[in-house]
Image (tube, rainbow, N blue to C red):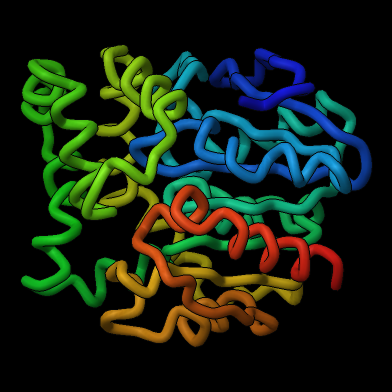
Length: 286
């Protein structure tokens, strides 16, 4: 995986961010989601580097990135990545992001609007909308939002009793199966899950999303960004059950456009060719 990429560990204010970097052209930051790592991009990264300078990073505390403080808000994660990209020489760049990475990217456009040239958000609704529309149907499918955000060490200790089992359960719960993941990628997800610090980051991330991140988003509700925004989601997932994702994101990005992909939550790994085509078309128009 990631043939021709360089591996970097970049020290920023509150973390050390692990990333793969390759290609030439305009800078493009790739961000993963829970419970994965930057490895999720392996299915399209080697095509993207033909046109872009690709930086695929692990979020703070995820994968091989190390958090040096206990702040797992999207604001802190966004700040990490802004600092990392500046150290690499990029002050303005495209962002393509999935799941938690996409929420980090959203916060990045609010806190650092000058840095983000365009954005692609994969299989999420705005955080405020997720909590606003949370009902029994969604809660059964997004149970991890409630479980991981429970106070104290209960989620952390339970997951660490069998982290690989929990990882597989999380992946199956969001995708319906694990066979869509390449063996090499699954091995990396399992390796990361065996690290108790990664489990702490999962819990810290979702705790922040239920508390401080909500406060930040409420404070900024009504602010919009004119940048190009692509919205993709899995037609077999849950994102479009209550709301039209494009309309939901137009409240933040009036230029947002997009469509469903015939996939579950992990659409990049399930439908790489289709996702790649949509991303390249989006990036070409910027």
